[in-house]
Length: 475
Ligand SMILES: *Cc1c(COP(=O)(O)O)cnc(C)c1O
Image (cartoon, rainbow, N blue to C red):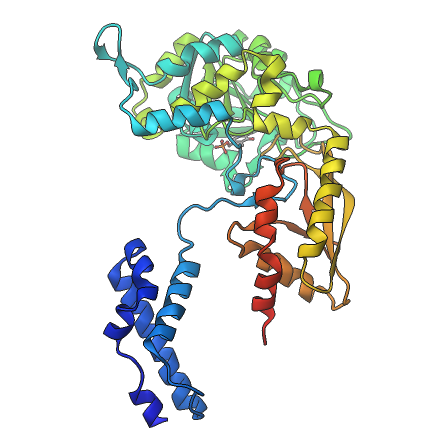
């Protein structure tokens, strides 16, 4: 043992091995040295504890190769591309909308060159970053004016802080929403400096509930789209038009937080109705807030549209500076919005809409094709079949309305409880491009609706599966 310990290569010897040359160009010298020390410490400890000396001397080459491997495998910091097989098309935890091609080109241009972000080319004076999307948003929604901020939560915060600081905002008890990742309407309202005034009940709210709540203390009236749940049964809500009339009779504005806020009437595409921005404005809403990266299919942004006078007030709020968007998102948003001028070709160019409208026979054919390709790539003791599933638009759109889909269901044929199948799920997350799937009823489901029709890159990832599973389950 002492001999083996004495024979261990020095840190410097390992560092000078060709096996580490590439790693040293990709990461810091100190990170490599730390990894070598850890590797050598591990070997030393194993020698002391195990006692039995290794069959051969531990050479500098062996240690260097091991270090190169661990550093390559552990460099998983930063944002990574993954395969979304969850069946939730616009998945908040997986980055929401996949941007259209036109937006990518604009992103690259804006990222690599100087732009007229806040520069008016015609006058040579300072410009306004909203100018690049303002007219387009107004043209598409019928609004008088518009402004863009960091996300929809920021839009709600800014609107309430501008119009209702220190004042009351009546909201129906049926609409006090919590959206995933910690957007709770009452909390945002409290931080905006406005005071929530709950009206009505969870299932029924009437016009007189709002009438009775209005006083000298009232700042604005607010309606919130119940974007991730449905209240069914004995229910009553005050329609937007009625609420707008009540607000206007008292000299107040009506703010509608639409959440996802589509610009399209989805019924024209055979889907259930989701309130549109145009409809909310036409019904009398003075301001409407919605997300740029939900059904709209663009980059993370929050859009505020409506009355010119109110938008002016909002733009003068100093908080707006803290919530503004950068040139990249302005570039991507304006190109995404331009696609909406051509509704006939929209579904070819907007990935979010394409995934939602994908015909079921197309998904079925894709599922069968993939299932046949996947079977030979599975580790031993697993089988794959095509099953019917329900996918969701996600991110608070069309709540309770599923989209029929197909999944590859992978099952354990050795019947060892859920152990092997959950290990397979974990191994899928460790592939070079992690595959995010879901476990359901003892099977691992890979939902097809959100996958691109080009199987090549997906199968390249799956090619790693058997070896990765073997490595993981090695005794
Ligand atoms: C999603 C949503 C929000 C938050 O929007 P983000 O873009 O996630 O900030 C706010 N209100 C409603 C009704 C929503 O659906």
